[in-house]
Image (cartoon, rainbow over all chains, first blue to last red; front, side, top):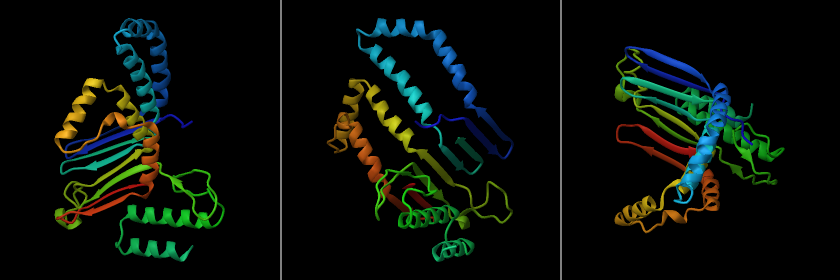
Length: 92
Length: 165
């Protein structure tokens, strides 16, 4: 199993300002899990209510897809320089 | 240091190739040398699928898209970050796992939206049903991407490269 992403580095630079920050994703994961656990009864009820119409399945799959997509972010790097702006995003 | 690596570094020093090209060439030399020696121990960022022998199938790990602008097109000589030859530079690295996850998201697309997508493709002359994309096909496609390399030079001298590593 791949390791989850730990840090996200975002840097935006233009002629007027230079802005950057490091986002500790390893702290967001436990926080998201706690929120998920707290909201799990509501989510479960919503899925059960919408299941007969078919949308419950999509709700469940979207949760899984969001988790898998987040887990796969490690290694993403975007470095774009325009005429007036420079954007750098890195997930490690 | 092997002769190949020396030549690559000389070309980089003479600005005949970019740093990205030098990195890719050095990685290829490393994987070739490690393939001739012990298999499966390279530092190219690839995953070894475990096959042994003279041909080792490297599993692609990242999709890279790079755009290198023509430095002469925007050079002003004053060294300003936004006015030198770096304007229009793009360097993107996408993990293959993210691409796989993105393709799996197609299962979330409602059938009505899939029908609209199919109709739009048919209008453009592409008779393809997006529902036919299966997980096994995706894996085969990703493995085949290992041999893909797109190298385009634009009219203004910018170079666009799409490759996997």
